[in-house]
Length: 266
Image (cartoon, rainbow, N blue to C red; front, side, top):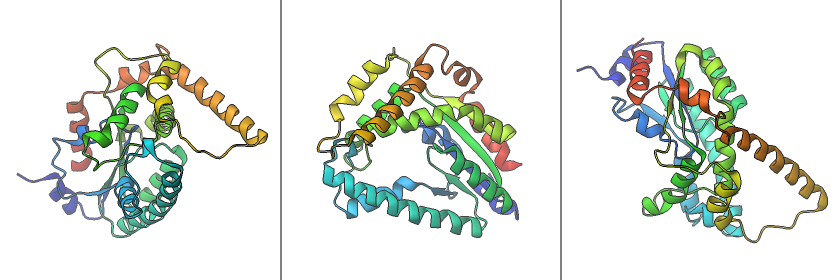
């Protein structure tokens, strides 16, 4: 049996890039399981970030980070981003096919990367995985403990903002990638919270950062304005019809896998 990786290697001059989009805990890796992608290069910022956190003796349980750990974590992320950019540049120069395992929370950065890849002769595909806000927060909250301390749990406020950005990006990404786009809805089967205040009380309040520097009036006003905007967007998405189009137009795991196979074989 010819593997998908062999097909990729034989498609000389036609390297492929698969960009993953989805909030933390959405289940992007779960969707890719069952595809014969062994040996295909996977680029993941988290791997570099976690390695640098360990070197700095910072716990991967970032939801409970101390002020000192948050400071070290910010420096580690800046360094990880710098190194990761080099990883992507080297991969493109080498015309290697790869999977970019991330959230694609920044639409502008993703557009820039897609343009760069296509200019370098790549065919680019996006796998978008939607999940509920509560599932994303719950998966993140449990990740550190469930992994035995080997995987990171982010500050829940970061997960909240990332979920909002990724969900807002659904329609723009669908339009941007056209036929080279597929989405899967990986949602909670149990009843979920739909009130933003209840969600924050359960998942954010217990992990509110301690020891933060006091803000001046101007900074407080900026924060309040940004929080009001974010809450408005989140409440709209949490409404009954907020994400209905995403769920209704998404396909099954098997259909998504078939489309990815078709992209690779094409």
